[in-house]
Image 1 (spheres, protein in one colour):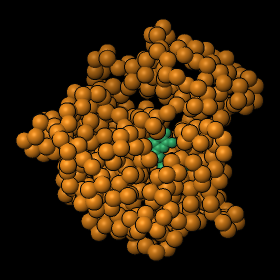
Image 2 (cartoon, helix red, strand yellow):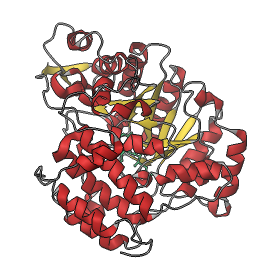
Image 3 (cartoon, helix red, strand yellow):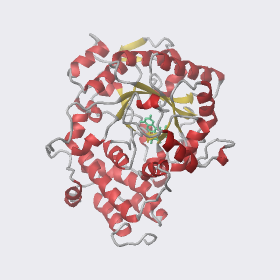
Image 4 (cartoon, helix red, strand yellow):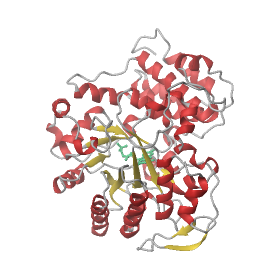
Length: 477
Ligand SMILES: Cc1cc2nc3c(=O)[nH]c(=O)nc-3n(C[C@H](O)[C@H](O)[C@H](O)COP(=O)(O)O)c2cc1C
């Protein structure tokens, strides 16, 4: 294990999935067969547009509307937001921005393409989770105060919670309301340590007009650009996904995400509160890991939470077959998923972990029996994985992106990110993405290093012109 992987950041190299006996699987044949039989109807009944057995996972620090739209334009039938912190959603100010579909629509006239969308929520208090989930579904139509009242009653703000209370009851003093913009899983947002990204300040030197002119999106902060018919005022989330999987633990006295796998009673209370708050017609789903760790106690916890979620009407569970302790290191245990699917054929289960290329999507389905596959790190800088999956479902050979396609998507993603995030943040985002996109370039290692050195949007554009220029043949640099 390298020093970097010991630190447990996200820049770890892909590890092979544990799928003994899976070597003989022919992904092309699996895909053809799936293309013939179609999607699991238990899934499409809940989310009609979810018409193919894969989707773009929630990826904190990456899966904003810009990335999601790019994925959808390449064939992703469903996308998940990054995990949004309940407390921030309720806090007012900019806390709701990332969940606010009207705001996204104002920045991105094409945001109607970002449907069906799964809104993911994470937190430590059942009441906050419930009120936050409802606020997302209702798009805050009752006003900030109403949702805060639901969560806190007469109290002025959130109380600290202690996950060690196995019944999930609240303890501790009243904590102040947060005011920062919503963001969660900060550890997940760690840029690629391998390339020592340090989030530079990006001066507004680069004039992006040419990009906007060609893609029809606009910069954030410039006032809404009305696009008739571009966005329905009734947009909402197709599902609410409760995150009980995130391995980040910021403060000892708080539990969020995967840390709830140690406290099943509290986890179930959260699931129950969210299900009760979200209107019955809106499906709720849950994201789990295979356990907090591999002890028998944690295995029992998983079973308890998993069973309870279906009993209380959750439409499906997406199971990331790593433990919380593993974070993102080491193999995802596909045998765990296979066993789960074998034992519970009546429960739709979606699989996550070690999906690095299009073949892994179909390998995972054939090996484990999951109804659909979450594509996570395998789609960062690689929206073509969705196109390839669609091609394979249609019985065709998957095609790699040409250099011209790579350039076009880099520009498209950049324009969307600028419109959504503004110049400074888009600069940071695009450097991260550029590094990942470089994997498709014939001189990938060099291009990756070039992107890693970029600190302004002008420089970013320079890399594009040097390495992806029109007329540069594939295979040339
Ligand atoms: C940078 C990063 C951010 C992530 N953020 C989220 C998130 O917000 N919500 C979520 O459910 N999973 C999140 N995950 C977990 C992924 O969705 C997925 O379950 C995990 O990466 C395993 O799949 P993979 O091995 O194919 O990447 C994140 C993973 C990474 C690497």
